[in-house]
Length: 298
Image (cartoon, rainbow, N blue to C red; front, side, top):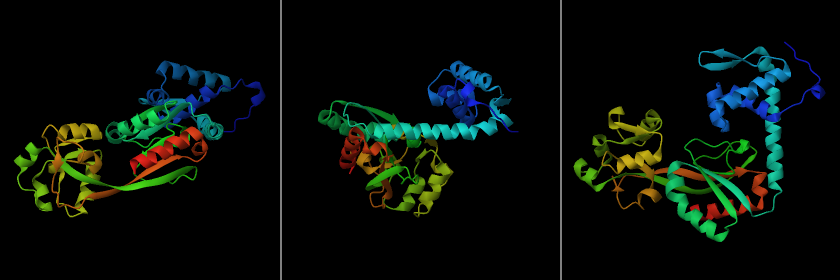
């Protein structure tokens, strides 16, 4: 099916096109509304209005979700290209801004956002109070190309060519527990002692078990009676004497309510990267925050 139209006759509204694009990517109006921060009825009206403007049906309902029609499939790549062009335009314009006043959005895991960043941001605010900082605490990687954040603190190097990254350090994770739990657990002198422990699982427990087994730790699903995708929830459970938690030792060593378990066990290394879009990295305000974070996190 080929669609031909005279675009000069269309009063095109990018907000409606964006509603179509995000709905197609998310698979439902409710998920798209959450992604865009809109009410679902508002988003639905934008999609309906675009269908009326273009004279085609873009979606068909399948169960509780939506599926693109043939017309929707033909149009989606054009709208996706428009979204990427709009993003590049925004990034390029933002990169030319030399003003120090304004907002910078930082994305980090909930553990870093709550336990490592606050004293750093206090110093940053004192150094440059004109900059407004918004912190996105998420254990999912924010999409910097879509401006979900300006700067991201990540544990992996980005592959996208439009992103720049600086490796801050090689961090190390260790197991921690409360003194009460460690006393109840008994001797933790060797790695085999960990097989008797309860461990608070993080996100993909099967992957975590595989990684720990590769380091010589004999663990099974039975060692993970409690699990959470949130580092903060995991840490709160640890401090309720419910088991051991694995976390960056800069956080664990600074918490007086816990102590290291198996102090002779080799730590678990992982990298810390600071990432930003290459265009907005030329922005004076962003560059100041990027360099400040790099120095403080190192």
